[in-house]
Length: 241
Ligand SMILES: Nc1ncnc2c1ncn2[C@@H]1O[C@H](COP(=O)(O)OP(=O)(O)OP(=O)(O)O)[C@@H](O)[C@H]1O
Ligand SMILES: [Mg+2]
Image (tube, rainbow, N blue to C red; front, side, top):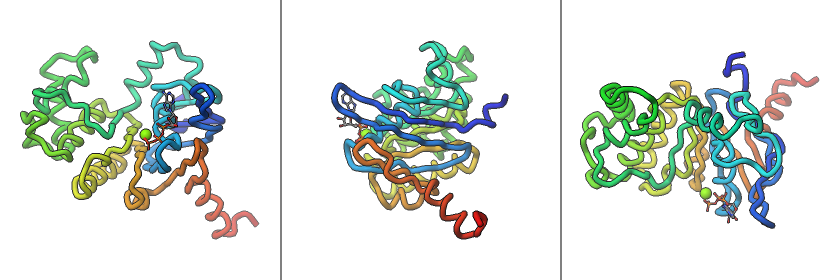
């Protein structure tokens, strides 16, 4: 069966506890191909916990996690790493670029273990950097790049292998509003090109511009606009009658 016939992410009754602390409580969340959604909520509400579970970086304490139809309980760590490498790109608030390394190498190194020859890795990296509008910054080192440019290098690295799912944890958190807007525009473009994108943000203005919003509070999903919208749609069209 093709991966496209399954949701990209399907969480059912997912909880995560750290000792006595319930960081995530019984979360249900289905994300379909091509969606772009914001995850919002106060500090400590479980946003990063949720993202790390979607990203298979963490296993839940309870509940089912399916990524592209794969039940992660059934995968050994090695197979899970392979699934993650093929399926998911990550972008974080801090760009994690090694000092002294030119952008092209920073991005190309993302393919170090892909078995591709160096020339091909660099060619793909160059293409990814052009895609994020950094064709003129290929040889700039992190200290020669603005914050927004650094984040675009990190995004180029995350989308290098064309993962169907991109998870971004506060990608604009360290940026001024103009650079943040450029990064958000880029995430919109990636979605238009077919990538499913999940963005954690503290910024209400950013969240308001995205098609779907999932709100967390004290580890619970207290609102999901897709669920609300689906109910509203039925009422609006009268199709439930
Ligand atoms: N590895 C861990 N060990 C113990 N507690 C943790 C761990 N990771 C997260 N927590 C706790 O779980 C809760 C949720 O944390 P999480 O990082 O998901 O919050 P968040 O919504 O991303 O917050 P922020 O907006 O500040 O990044 C917090 O109370 C946090 O202290
Ligand atoms: Mg967080």
